[in-house]
Image (cartoon, rainbow, N blue to C red):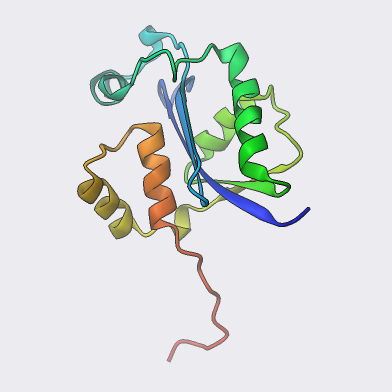
Length: 162
């Protein structure tokens, strides 16, 4: 292993009560990006998903992916992004990790490690990303890009607070 590659991931899903994947976006720290939308039961979508998320879906053939092909497409993308390194999949919601694992029937590649970075996201920088880029929130790739932009590693200090 020659190191690790940070990949920031976000998902959109039908509802908190019964989450089914709608879309997934990934933004590598080195700039590569992945985005896919999968067929989902619209009837299971919450009002929020219908009103906010669905209008943002691209719906073009390049990003639409049958659920049974999604794992293969992700593996193909990882082959380009990894370059020998393990992937640290950074997310800010446990739903993201859960849905990613479901794509691989509970068995993601051994080279993929998960890290909840919610506490490492500077919310002002995340907001600034969306404002300055004009890219709306609640689109999986836009949110992954915003997370990459706003990520700040926390450094532990040995100095006590004065």
